[in-house]
Image (cartoon, rainbow, N blue to C red; front, top):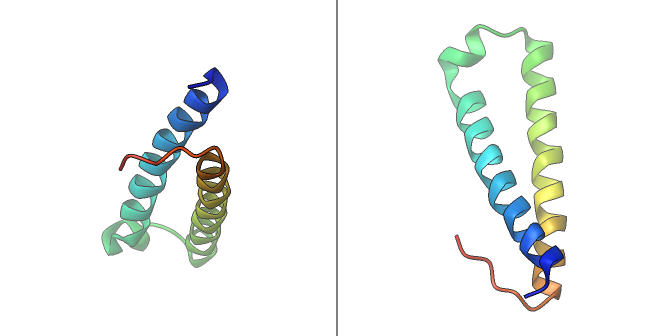
Length: 70
């Protein structure tokens, strides 16, 4: 496997973990109560961008013929 594909896989794993942790945090009502409505909206927007980036990244990996291990 080429080095850059390995780096893509490392990035996928790291980004997947970050998305999962971030979503868990902002899905917790106790955490949200501490934030303004504007901050909540921005965090959900950020998660959306992170998920779009994750989707593009996984498509690039799959186009290289590499199966993702989850």
